[in-house]
Image 1 (cartoon, chains in turn purple, brown):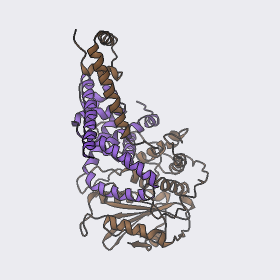
Image 2 (cartoon, rainbow over the protein chains, first blue to last red):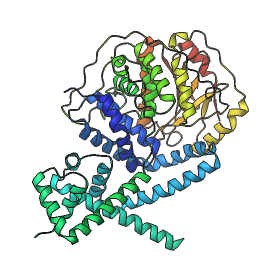
Image 3 (spheres, one colour):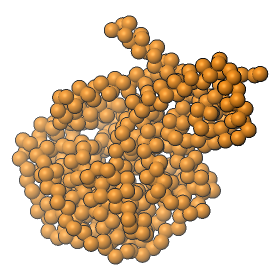
Image 4 (tube, rainbow over the protein chains, first blue to last red):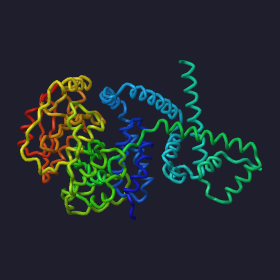
Amino acid sequence: VSIDWARLYEELYPKLVRYLHHKVWDAERARELAQEVFVRALRSNPDDPRAWLFTVAANLARDEARMVIRRRRHLALLRVEAESAQPPEDAAAALEAEARQEAVRRALECLTERDRDVLLLWDAGLSYAQIAERTGLAAGAVGTTLGRARRRLVEAHTGLEESHAARG
Amino acid sequence: MRHVADGLLNAWLDGELNDAGEIAVLEGHLANCASCRARLEAERQVRQRAGELLSVSSAAPLAGAPFSELVARARAGAEPRTGPVGGGRGGRWWVPASWAASVLLALALGWNARDLLEGRDTAAGNGQAAPRRAVAVADEVATAAAGESGDDRPGAGVQAPSPSAGAAPPVPLAPAPVQAAASSPEGVVVAGAAARQAEAVARSRPAEAVAEVTFQAVPAEAVAPTWAQLAERIGVPVYRLEGMQALSVEVAGDSTVLRSVYALPAGGRVELLQEIPRRPGLAPSLPAEARMEAAAAMDAGKAAGAHVLRVERDGVRLTLAGELSPDELARLAERLRSD
């Protein structure tokens, strides 16, 4: 099987970054991991690249989560260095973006793991068949699960916003 | 008549209904059922809103490394050596991307990367640095020796691509016209575009150009506050090469190794790796050792002029790696200072 990896990289790299970012919540790290996934893929040359790429991405993200507390300390360290070089208006915009991101992160945490996984795979542009393959769901169950996951995300996000507004 | 199931409505919204008969039944029902039309509309709004939320919170992909660089990394292989590193765990470890990009790329083990590169220098690159970097990588890969493909596979039974041996002829290389980043007075550049550009410049010089090394001094006060800050935040003394300008300083993802990269005035660059002990006096952790091994993997690149020097200062394990002779590395080691 000959796979055009260069083309796949072009097509799937942004999707993998997006997928990974919703799992590790660090943009730079998501990019690094997405590239690492491709490096591994080039070594292994899997037959079914799409499913393989997202499976490995999910594994890396899980490994990542295990180290997350230790890492945060140092990310904070690096971020301070980077931010000191930023003009103030950028910093304000960055803060705002971070707050928006945090709200979505917390909303995602309200979902069950399976719902979240299905949702993020959909968001990354996978088809129902590919999602089914990745998650072990029956193909016919993807629509139901996905519909529920999207609804819960929106509801959780709205709920968080409201409680935030009530407090603030 | 039965109403349409939620799953079916969502499949329809997602363009995942492929069966013409099924579609006809669903659309027929929707035409006659106000309640299902309302549900469809609700699902549509939820779908749109969920997509918006996930877009708001997603990272801009920015430019990934040029594909050719990934190819070089894949070929260089962050393969664990069975034995010493894992301490019997037979461990599979991997070098996080930022490490692999520099440490392993320096190995520049050969492949037919040139074929892959052709017509692709601007692939995945919307940043300014990307195409230039692609050229630099092409040069490194082209001058490399034959490599061995890695074996890091998460699933069983997958076939590794067969490496094609033999070095391709060097790609003609125009000097990269980036000066600003390389001469930046900033002592510590963290994961910034400037650092990447400066790295690209450093890489674009062929290794053969490094004959005699002279060191360019930078005003100490330009660097010192930042180094001291760094040491304070990490909580251990930070080693650096005195009088030289760091292109970048990074902490490994798992916080076990600090790496700083310096440009050599004559071209090329040198990396300083410092183990960050969990607690003073403790034996190095496994990942730290693995990282040091990664640097040591540059031994394999000796043919291309890369060497590794390991030293210990006040119980801190340090590794210097670069396209320098052992003598030059030893001279460089005399410049090690800590804050």
